[in-house]
Length: 109
Image 1 (cartoon, rainbow, N blue to C red):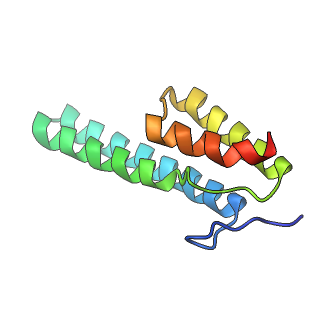
Image 2: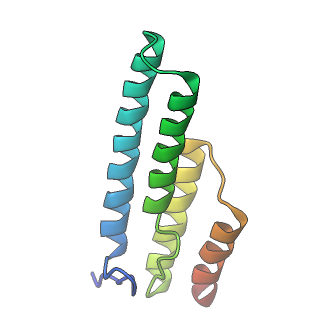
């Protein structure tokens, strides 16, 4: 299989997917840790909110929505992964992220 490369980072779709999954797992661990600290009263609500915002920001950066697939098959894999992520995480893309996804898929669709 030919692996497409992201021009900016030189990463394949598989590598980007693995990085995003790792970022999600790390985010879940951090959230669990902060939930435990908050439950025992070790942190204020403000500190808790800041920590969750930082985790969400890091996870969003790991999405790498701008990845441009090289062919139709990879475009479909990207769309499936993004769709599955959105459903599982119960989140939605920002308007600019949605535009990037649709623009990247357009040449193959």
